[in-house]
Image (cartoon, rainbow, N blue to C red; front, side, top):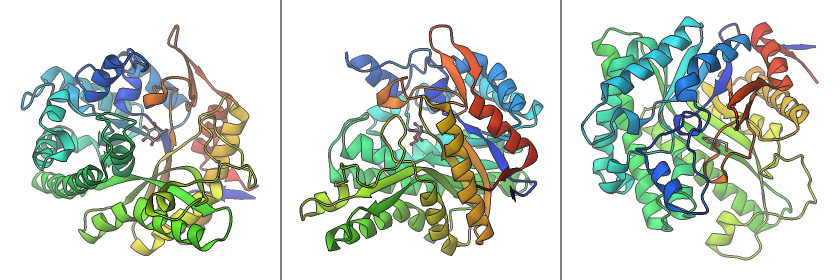
Length: 409
Ligand code: GAL
């Protein structure tokens, strides 16, 4: 039996600037990579800044009808208030290259990295962050409104705040609950104001209304034993990690769709009582085994269905802005893609308006603090030669992209 998608269903893959372009020397990640001797530097990454045309040829060959990318703020505005015309021209070329190949762009304005000058002002901890982000947003949206319908203002606000300000694993390596809350508040406010600004720019230019959202990282929280503490932990994590950021933006009428980044399951098992344990304890035993990606994350397609059904109450369309697997087992990648597409299809049948599915990632790339070893790409990169090689799973996915349907299990 075939599971069909709508003709307009978006099917493609995603990247983000710092992870693929190379030599993003004016942002906080680059500075951080260079400062620590044990950190892996992104250096040339995939040299996508130079090779984007060839990479988009591959996306076209693979029948993708959309591509998610991010515009690197630190390239556009390397010094506060000074916009780089050559870099704006570069991204114009990038968007033109997609257009020529008939691939619709989904454009992210903030994907984890920040200009160094912005971080020197206090970054997202300061109320000024919002003004700076809006100034950049205004410039970019005025330049590219004509060619972009889908915008993602901020990628995964919860992940950015969690790793940078609570766990301290990512720059600026803070470990403070209070600072995490301040950053999350400023990110939310920046989105709400950017949402209105983007809509105003489209109106002033008589352009059809854009689709603006964030990409929210959602996890399928489940417990391994039905204890009271575990049930409470699942409830709290789902409410505060998954739904809170969506809810507050929804209440301010600032979402045209919900961007969902979903990777897998978190198996909750609270070891001791206390807030920290409720919010962070997971099960380490392998008694409810699922297949895993090479970072050890549980593969759980059903979780996508459950989360999409939870989002139904907002009566908004959903775009899966990221879903993907890092693995050295390409057959598992294909199984992963099919499994998640089937669950997305099932949610559509059950009344959720899903606009599309964007696989993470088009290319193997720089996986933040992990470096280059996790392989998420539909296209393999040989980092010695930067040669690209399409993986078999990508050719299988290409058939779905072409025919708009997949076989039921
Ligand atoms: C997301 C993030 C991406 C990518 C992916 C795989 O959280 O937006 O940049 O790294 O995870 O881990």
